[in-house]
Image 1 (tube, rainbow, N blue to C red):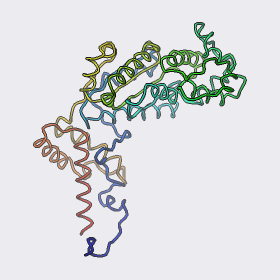
Image 2 (image 1 turned 60 degrees about the vertical axis):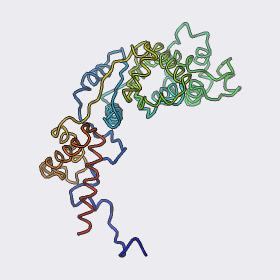
Image 3 (image 1 turned 120 degrees about the vertical axis):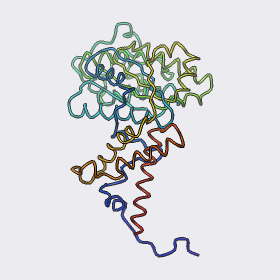
Image 4 (image 1 turned 90 degrees about the vertical axis):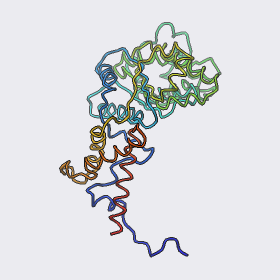
Amino acid sequence: MNFLGAPLTHESPSARYRRFGYRENPFPKQGQVDGDIYVARPELRDLENDIRLFLQGRPQGSVWAVQGAIGHGKSNFLKAVERNIKEAIHQGQLQATACRFVPSLALTPRRIVEELLLAIGEDTIAALIKHEPIPSVPEQLRATDFGRFWANVRAVSSSVGAQFLMRWLSGQQTYKAERETFHITARDRLPPAIAFPYLRAMLDMFDASNLLKRIVLLLDEFEDIERLTRAGQTEYVQVLKTLLNAFNWRGLYVVIAGQAAAFTTIGESYPSLASRWRSVSLLPVQSPDDAVALAMPYETAALLDPAKAPKALIPTAVDVKSIFIKLYETQRVVSQRVLLTALHEWIEDASDKQSKK
């Protein structure tokens, strides 16, 4: 017996949704995160204002802990921040700024160094090497390998020097001939705790040459730290503290997002770290009207005809409210993810019914 039954007919994916006026299903399916669409959250207003002040020129950074249950929109917020900053840079509205979104924290402390370097970028480091003159290395670091690197970096091209510096600072393998070129005496891989003061000194050098003045680091899934051993957690926390101490609130803005339990656990075990972050908790979808406010931007973004009247969108506001109420009656707490997944499935069911006609 052929489980497929009658001969198959083929329908293009776009045709499924075109009859509703959409290019694609407007709503992300279970587990997808779309940073291109973001609905403002009242509970995040203070954080958004604080980031804005930093981007507008305030030299002091901050550390924020964005807490929330699974599906409450933590990753969506971080990705939206990243997208907005990169768009502003691309449009020329924001200069001398770097931003990096890191999907997961619980790898190794060295990862933080690597992500900071990727945020800065090889091109920016090469531009610093080519700058006339190269800004002075802080006096206390001139007799270190870092100081010797900058004293001898013009022996190679700017791109070669930038590539080496990124590998060396991130603790990757370097070779004797390379180290001799830059008069670096240490043969061991550079540990993160030493790399951070060097990165901080580089930010001063970037600032002096107007190449880079601020870095925004967006760290997601903080709950992954609970998978580490106690020794691993301690190492990670100590390195994170070293990073914050090295930058000393200047030029670095960090947003850490994760489930509340992880912040509670780490905060109780390491209060000296918890004392540095400001906390905000994301709320679930609160009402049928909030459900409509969340759904509308997704529907609008997927429209084939952007001029289509909002009241003509499917599912309608009444449909969205009905879906929210049913979810609330069974779950009492309706997260963004649960609602968007339910709306995604509603569209799929509706398109399946249309296809069978």
